[in-house]
Image (cartoon, rainbow, N blue to C red; front, side, top):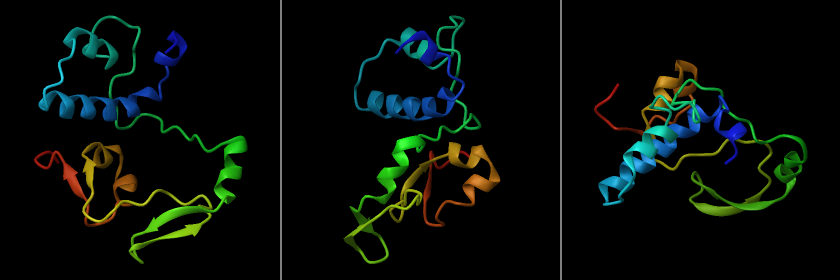
Length: 130
């Protein structure tokens, strides 16, 4: 990763996922360099990685330019309503969450508008934090 990439203000949102994956992996025995972990997560004085995990960071939209063409290519998708795979164009639809999915608490911290888009049957993780 180049220095320009590490200073990206949009990186704060992706670091929530990185931190969650690190916590889960460490719970299963992954050994990490805690100093480097804090540095990458923007939790130290070193300013190479300036964006700490931030649920309100700018959301990156990767569907720009030529990527829009991919929305017109039929692909196999699982339809949770029909409970089977069907071939269809995506047509700029958002990703669907399977029933009972675990969703990180940061989705609720992002904004009321964002959390209202979540299906009612998702489970907040970790569950004890509001």
